[in-house]
Length: 273
Ligand SMILES: [Zn+2]
Ligand SMILES: [Zn+2]
Image 1 (cartoon, rainbow, N blue to C red):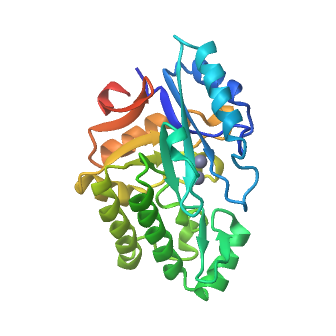
Image 2 (image 1 turned 30 degrees about the vertical axis):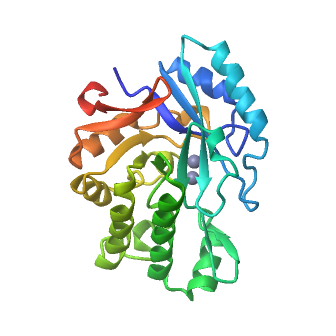
Protein backbone atom coordinates (compact mmCIF):
# COMPACT_ATOMS: atom_id res chain seq x y z
CA UNK A 1 0.00 0.00 0.00
CA UNK A 2 1.73 3.21 -1.10
CA UNK A 3 1.60 6.42 0.88
CA UNK A 4 -1.97 7.62 0.27
CA UNK A 5 -2.20 10.68 2.47
CA UNK A 6 -1.20 14.32 2.21
CA UNK A 7 -1.49 16.98 4.89
CA UNK A 8 -0.16 19.96 2.92
CA UNK A 9 -2.69 20.74 0.20
CA UNK A 10 -3.69 24.05 -1.36
CA UNK A 11 -6.85 24.81 -3.31
CA UNK A 12 -8.74 27.79 -4.68
CA UNK A 13 -9.39 29.15 -1.15
CA UNK A 14 -5.79 30.39 -1.47
CA UNK A 15 -3.33 30.10 -4.36
CA UNK A 16 -4.17 26.56 -5.46
CA UNK A 17 -5.22 26.13 -9.07
CA UNK A 18 -8.08 23.70 -8.37
CA UNK A 19 -11.15 23.73 -6.20
CA UNK A 20 -11.20 21.81 -2.95
CA UNK A 21 -13.61 19.27 -4.43
CA UNK A 22 -11.39 18.73 -7.48
CA UNK A 23 -8.47 18.04 -5.14
CA UNK A 24 -10.58 15.57 -3.15
CA UNK A 25 -11.59 13.78 -6.35
CA UNK A 26 -7.93 13.61 -7.44
CA UNK A 27 -7.07 12.18 -4.02
CA UNK A 28 -9.77 9.55 -4.43
CA UNK A 29 -8.49 8.58 -7.84
CA UNK A 30 -5.04 8.08 -6.29
CA UNK A 31 -6.56 5.82 -3.64
CA UNK A 32 -5.97 8.27 -0.79
CA UNK A 33 -7.53 7.52 2.58
CA UNK A 34 -6.80 11.03 3.90
CA UNK A 35 -6.35 14.56 2.61
CA UNK A 36 -5.66 17.57 4.80
CA UNK A 37 -6.15 21.06 3.43
CA UNK A 38 -3.73 23.78 4.45
CA UNK A 39 -4.56 27.10 2.82
CA UNK A 40 -2.14 29.97 3.42
CA UNK A 41 -2.82 32.26 6.37
CA UNK A 42 -3.52 35.84 5.35
CA UNK A 43 -0.22 37.73 5.05
CA UNK A 44 -1.62 40.87 3.50
CA UNK A 45 1.29 40.57 1.06
CA UNK A 46 0.76 37.45 -0.97
CA UNK A 47 -2.45 36.98 -2.89
CA UNK A 48 -4.55 35.01 -2.95
CA UNK A 49 -4.53 33.76 0.63
CA UNK A 50 -7.16 32.33 2.95
CA UNK A 51 -9.53 35.19 3.76
CA UNK A 52 -12.84 33.35 3.91
CA UNK A 53 -12.15 31.01 6.82
CA UNK A 54 -15.87 30.27 7.51
CA UNK A 55 -16.38 29.40 3.84
CA UNK A 56 -13.27 27.21 3.84
CA UNK A 57 -14.38 25.30 6.93
CA UNK A 58 -17.93 24.97 5.63
CA UNK A 59 -16.70 23.55 2.33
CA UNK A 60 -14.53 21.03 4.18
CA UNK A 61 -17.59 19.98 6.23
CA UNK A 62 -19.71 19.63 3.11
CA UNK A 63 -17.11 17.50 1.33
CA UNK A 64 -16.47 15.46 4.46
CA UNK A 65 -20.13 14.46 4.48
CA UNK A 66 -20.35 13.96 0.74
CA UNK A 67 -17.33 11.66 0.62
CA UNK A 68 -17.81 10.00 4.02
CA UNK A 69 -16.62 6.40 3.98
CA UNK A 70 -14.33 7.10 1.02
CA UNK A 71 -11.78 9.56 2.38
CA UNK A 72 -11.15 11.55 5.55
CA UNK A 73 -10.85 15.29 4.95
CA UNK A 74 -9.13 17.40 7.58
CA UNK A 75 -9.03 21.16 8.03
CA UNK A 76 -5.51 22.45 8.56
CA UNK A 77 -3.90 25.77 7.78
CA UNK A 78 -0.42 26.78 6.61
CA UNK A 79 0.40 29.56 9.00
CA UNK A 80 3.08 31.97 7.93
CA UNK A 81 5.55 32.58 10.75
CA UNK A 82 4.83 36.33 10.72
CA UNK A 83 1.09 36.09 10.15
CA UNK A 84 -0.60 33.77 12.64
CA UNK A 85 -4.27 32.98 12.26
CA UNK A 86 -6.49 34.71 14.82
CA UNK A 87 -8.12 31.52 16.08
CA UNK A 88 -5.94 28.42 15.60
CA UNK A 89 -8.52 26.34 17.45
CA UNK A 90 -10.71 26.44 14.32
CA UNK A 91 -8.25 24.15 12.58
CA UNK A 92 -7.31 20.54 13.30
CA UNK A 93 -3.63 21.30 12.79
CA UNK A 94 -1.16 24.04 11.94
CA UNK A 95 1.72 23.87 9.50
CA UNK A 96 4.18 26.61 10.43
CA UNK A 97 6.15 27.98 7.47
CA UNK A 98 8.47 30.91 6.84
CA UNK A 99 7.72 32.76 3.58
CA UNK A 100 8.60 36.29 4.68
CA UNK A 101 11.20 38.18 6.70
CA UNK A 102 10.73 41.49 8.53
CA UNK A 103 13.29 44.06 9.61
CA UNK A 104 13.28 46.07 12.84
CA UNK A 105 11.32 48.88 11.20
CA UNK A 106 8.52 46.50 10.31
CA UNK A 107 9.27 46.34 6.60
CA UNK A 108 8.46 42.87 5.28
CA UNK A 109 9.69 40.99 2.22
CA UNK A 110 8.45 37.76 0.73
CA UNK A 111 11.52 35.54 0.43
CA UNK A 112 9.45 32.90 -1.36
CA UNK A 113 9.41 35.08 -4.52
CA UNK A 114 12.58 35.75 -6.46
CA UNK A 115 12.44 39.52 -6.86
CA UNK A 116 11.49 40.23 -3.28
CA UNK A 117 14.06 37.68 -2.08
CA UNK A 118 16.72 39.74 -3.82
CA UNK A 119 15.30 43.00 -2.44
CA UNK A 120 15.30 41.54 1.06
CA UNK A 121 18.88 40.33 0.69
CA UNK A 122 20.06 43.80 -0.35
CA UNK A 123 17.87 46.01 1.82
CA UNK A 124 17.65 44.00 5.04
CA UNK A 125 21.00 42.23 5.00
CA UNK A 126 23.25 44.45 2.86
CA UNK A 127 23.86 41.54 0.50
CA UNK A 128 25.05 39.16 3.25
CA UNK A 129 23.22 35.99 2.32
CA UNK A 130 24.36 34.07 5.39
CA UNK A 131 22.73 36.70 7.58
CA UNK A 132 19.51 36.14 5.65
CA UNK A 133 19.91 32.39 6.17
CA UNK A 134 20.36 32.86 9.92
CA UNK A 135 17.32 35.13 10.17
CA UNK A 136 15.25 32.63 8.19
CA UNK A 137 16.08 29.66 10.41
CA UNK A 138 15.77 31.72 13.60
CA UNK A 139 12.29 32.83 12.60
CA UNK A 140 11.35 29.25 11.77
CA UNK A 141 12.36 28.04 15.23
CA UNK A 142 10.88 31.05 17.01
CA UNK A 143 7.50 30.61 15.38
CA UNK A 144 7.38 26.91 16.24
CA UNK A 145 8.21 27.69 19.87
CA UNK A 146 5.52 30.37 19.95
CA UNK A 147 2.65 28.69 18.10
CA UNK A 148 3.39 24.98 18.67
CA UNK A 149 2.30 23.72 15.25
CA UNK A 150 1.91 20.02 14.54
CA UNK A 151 4.01 20.33 11.37
CA UNK A 152 7.02 22.41 10.28
CA UNK A 153 6.64 23.41 6.63
CA UNK A 154 9.53 23.37 4.11
CA UNK A 155 12.23 23.96 6.72
CA UNK A 156 14.95 25.08 4.29
CA UNK A 157 12.86 26.97 1.72
CA UNK A 158 15.60 29.60 2.01
CA UNK A 159 17.56 27.59 -0.58
CA UNK A 160 14.79 27.90 -3.15
CA UNK A 161 16.81 30.30 -5.35
CA UNK A 162 20.21 29.00 -4.33
CA UNK A 163 20.78 26.44 -7.08
CA UNK A 164 24.48 25.99 -7.69
CA UNK A 165 25.26 27.84 -4.47
CA UNK A 166 24.39 31.13 -6.12
CA UNK A 167 23.95 32.99 -2.82
CA UNK A 168 25.47 30.78 -0.12
CA UNK A 169 27.25 27.47 0.38
CA UNK A 170 24.76 24.91 1.67
CA UNK A 171 27.62 22.63 2.77
CA UNK A 172 29.38 25.31 4.84
CA UNK A 173 29.46 25.06 8.63
CA UNK A 174 27.81 28.50 8.83
CA UNK A 175 24.79 27.32 6.82
CA UNK A 176 24.51 23.94 8.51
CA UNK A 177 24.91 25.43 11.99
CA UNK A 178 22.07 27.87 11.35
CA UNK A 179 19.80 25.06 10.21
CA UNK A 180 20.85 22.71 13.00
CA UNK A 181 20.17 25.34 15.66
CA UNK A 182 16.61 25.61 14.39
CA UNK A 183 16.23 21.82 14.34
CA UNK A 184 17.59 21.59 17.89
CA UNK A 185 15.05 24.15 19.08
CA UNK A 186 12.13 22.56 17.24
CA UNK A 187 12.58 18.86 18.10
CA UNK A 188 11.62 19.16 21.79
CA UNK A 189 8.27 20.66 20.77
CA UNK A 190 7.36 17.39 19.03
CA UNK A 191 6.51 19.15 15.76
CA UNK A 192 6.81 16.90 12.72
CA UNK A 193 9.21 18.07 10.00
CA UNK A 194 7.63 17.62 6.62
CA UNK A 195 9.61 16.26 3.69
CA UNK A 196 8.11 18.60 1.11
CA UNK A 197 8.22 17.60 -2.57
CA UNK A 198 6.58 20.84 -3.77
CA UNK A 199 9.87 22.48 -4.75
CA UNK A 200 10.76 19.42 -6.82
CA UNK A 201 7.51 19.78 -8.74
CA UNK A 202 7.31 23.54 -9.12
CA UNK A 203 10.94 24.64 -9.12
CA UNK A 204 12.77 21.56 -10.34
CA UNK A 205 14.70 21.22 -7.09
CA UNK A 206 16.73 18.01 -7.05
CA UNK A 207 15.84 17.18 -3.46
CA UNK A 208 12.90 17.89 -1.17
CA UNK A 209 12.80 20.42 1.66
CA UNK A 210 14.64 19.74 3.90
CA UNK A 211 17.66 18.51 2.01
CA UNK A 212 19.31 15.18 2.84
CA UNK A 213 22.01 16.46 5.26
CA UNK A 214 19.34 18.17 7.35
CA UNK A 215 17.11 15.09 7.22
CA UNK A 216 20.03 13.06 8.57
CA UNK A 217 20.52 15.56 11.36
CA UNK A 218 16.82 15.47 12.23
CA UNK A 219 17.05 11.68 12.37
CA UNK A 220 20.17 11.72 14.52
CA UNK A 221 18.53 14.10 16.97
CA UNK A 222 15.40 11.98 17.27
CA UNK A 223 13.05 14.18 15.21
CA UNK A 224 9.92 13.04 13.40
CA UNK A 225 9.14 13.42 9.70
CA UNK A 226 6.23 13.11 7.28
CA UNK A 227 6.02 13.33 3.48
CA UNK A 228 3.87 16.10 1.99
CA UNK A 229 3.47 17.37 -1.56
CA UNK A 230 2.55 21.01 -0.80
CA UNK A 231 0.33 20.50 -3.81
CA UNK A 232 -1.22 23.48 -5.59
CA UNK A 233 -2.79 21.46 -8.40
CA UNK A 234 -4.14 18.02 -9.26
CA UNK A 235 -0.98 16.75 -10.95
CA UNK A 236 1.25 17.12 -7.89
CA UNK A 237 -0.90 15.65 -5.14
CA UNK A 238 1.37 12.64 -4.58
CA UNK A 239 4.38 13.97 -6.42
CA UNK A 240 7.43 11.73 -6.01
CA UNK A 241 6.20 10.25 -2.74
CA UNK A 242 8.09 6.93 -3.22
CA UNK A 243 11.31 8.84 -3.84
CA UNK A 244 10.78 11.02 -0.77
CA UNK A 245 10.19 7.91 1.34
CA UNK A 246 13.40 6.38 -0.04
CA UNK A 247 15.27 9.55 0.88
CA UNK A 248 13.86 9.34 4.39
CA UNK A 249 15.07 5.75 4.57
CA UNK A 250 18.49 6.75 3.27
CA UNK A 251 18.63 9.38 5.98
CA UNK A 252 18.06 6.64 8.55
CA UNK A 253 14.33 6.83 9.21
CA UNK A 254 12.38 3.59 9.45
CA UNK A 255 9.01 5.29 9.96
CA UNK A 256 7.16 8.43 8.98
CA UNK A 257 4.10 10.22 10.30
CA UNK A 258 1.00 10.70 8.21
CA UNK A 259 -2.65 11.68 8.46
CA UNK A 260 -4.85 8.65 8.93
CA UNK A 261 -8.51 9.04 9.87
CA UNK A 262 -7.74 12.72 10.44
CA UNK A 263 -4.99 12.23 13.04
CA UNK A 264 -1.22 12.08 12.78
CA UNK A 265 0.04 8.52 13.22
CA UNK A 266 3.42 6.85 12.80
CA UNK A 267 3.78 4.05 10.27
CA UNK A 268 6.78 2.05 9.03
CA UNK A 269 8.15 3.20 5.71
CA UNK A 270 8.33 -0.42 4.57
CA UNK A 271 4.54 -0.57 4.72
CA UNK A 272 4.20 2.51 2.49
CA UNK A 273 6.47 1.60 -0.40
ZN1 LIG B 1 4.62 27.39 2.14
ZN1 LIG C 1 2.15 25.30 1.08
